[in-house]
Image 1 (cartoon, rainbow, N blue to C red):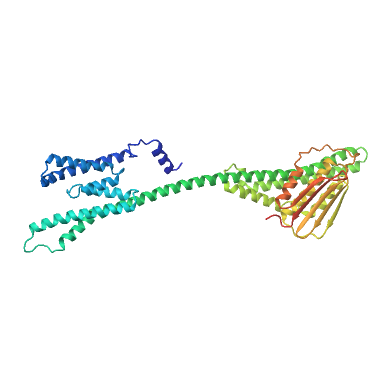
Image 2 (cartoon, rainbow, N blue to C red):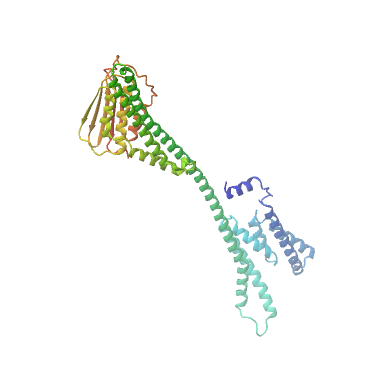
Length: 438
């Protein structure tokens, strides 16, 4: 919580209100000013009683009552100014007039009302000052008295001096107060917006972490599932032919070793990319939320650059043939320059489709077709019905292969279709744009 929010919460919930005052010091200030004004008006009421022939106690009480009106200046500033204007002919209430005009100008009273009351106070002060100065000058004037300009000019200066300064100062304080309130509201609004942005940044960071975990799981599945599936197939073949054909068993054992080394190499590369993309994570350091998405993107880009390419499909098919699968490869068109993520996705689609054939259709004949069409590349892997005489390798299936392929292809703006064929086999087809999705 900010200082402004804490202040407002304190004012609104913990500070005791005294009628129309919000703070105790405001009560003390207004009561003190009212006492000073009442004392001033009471002293000036003595002279007023002497001039009008009223009893002195009446003039004092009148002055006390008139001056005490200043205590309600915050609640009814217009009433205070009207009382000050009404007591101007009695030459009392100067403090009340000054403070009342200041409070009126600083309040939220419409400016037209403030201007009218200021004009009334200015005219009243000018008239009273003019009359008193004219009487004083006529009594004291001799052969060298002041000119005709003295009385009106002096009256004008005195009325302006008693009216303009408190009004101008009140306008300044009122504008400053409204500006501070506007800044507080803006600060509260910015605080809410920052909180919302922080929540959104946390959501984006969580989304980036989820996407990166999904990508890593997909890559691990592609690497481990295919290599290990081939290793299991070769191990089963090794077990079957070892007593009969030791030479073939040796070849199968060598293939198993090659597959294991390739799987380990790809896993090391993947883990190395993850460590490079987020070095602070290995040290237990706290990573800023804004950097999570960038680190994930950098790791994904690095993994894509170092990933397999489309021309390695022939090697991939050769490994499946070595495992006993009958695979035919056909390529239409001339290969073009594809984006790295497109080539890697195409390779992974073929790889996962062949892995599924090893798992679910052992001994089935398989056809792999690649078509280069300039602006896109298409691939199709289709297998016939499973050979019932083939030995089931007992490979487990997590059901994520087709889901991962679909996510890869759709993520690049491509088209993915899979399903059984009329001949009892299974077909996987995908079309990818040459440069991936924007």
